[in-house]
Image (cartoon, rainbow, N blue to C red; front, side, top):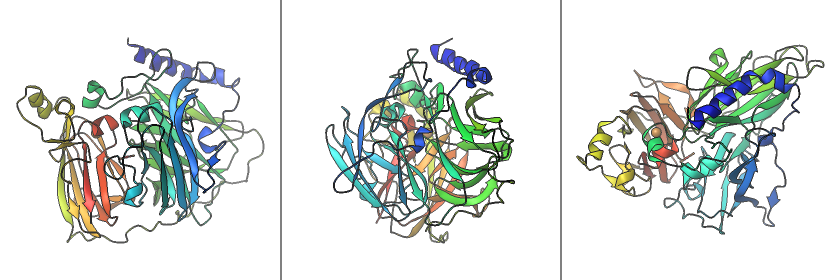
Length: 484
Ligand code: C2O
Ligand code: CU
């Protein structure tokens, strides 16, 4: 048994014995919701210092893990603005590596998108950069490094951005739930195997230790008949999580930051690919004094307990749960798309272990066209190129306002999480041009599956499109497009 397996079974054993342990455990801080010691510069910018820190990933009894994070914490600070307000962040890079901040899912001006060499130069060690833009949409977003991503995100370089609705939302309170997996060595340090060839050619870097809000087992104190807004965010390098809320009926209200036609999550389960967010309304309908687990699939047919709701023993906050919610107020997304005049493009995804491309490539049989990617790192292609996502010709160029329909054809033995910068898209139905009742910025394309998306290219600039499994992105599954 490798030490990774040893750790995962230790975690499984611990959560199985959870009931005995938890009566002793003090209630844990919901760290992702807390901003401590925010530094505000004289000109009103929120100063974020990217630096080293620690996180008690394995619980208070174990040695904390050294991480990299914004203000030295992971998840990084939760930034909050109201829709239409400006985000003003001064990133100070106190690491020994360059970095940039990408604001994932924000339909912002191109110059603020944080893609190295495409929209800005890397922020060198000791240097700073000012990000300033108005937040166009209310919803759950996140920010993360877009340079040396497979290492920086695995070490914790990400934070949360919440854009609040202008209208009141009828919930009692909200809880941010950041899910991540960590590949830890036996001593609890982050395993330094970043971006290695095996991970890159398979499912990306999967960690064996899964946390909510960087806690070993998160405990969320609740009272009976509250309505919580849970903001779920998958910040993992590559893992797709299926979360299950035991004994509850969470209602999906928004996906990838955008309000959706709401529906009850089947069997209390939701699936999040890397980069995805889901806003749930969850009514705490159990009796006072009970507990209910938050479970995650372990990719081996089992489940692990990541956290739990702990019901207070006192009176319910109201006699009955709240009535069915109204939908969240709409964001100013494009009202219609012009399919007849759309630019239509097939985007085959190829490569990876077990593919013809890799086997031929390894025998030197075929040259894979690559832009900015070393031949030995050309593991994946997007539309027949291996690209860093900023070199080479654009995947397509369109005039502002044109509808774009992309067909992702996954010819590989692995799933991919395809992310489009600066725009939200619709997922089209399989047989006709109807679409799913939600917007996305990142969609999972299953093994050998085809998915069609459509969006209005209404945001001028140079935008990346890539797999959000970061080891795939860095080994070729990336491109850029231009809106003029
Ligand atoms: Cu969340 Cu291009 O990334
Ligand atoms: Cu991928």
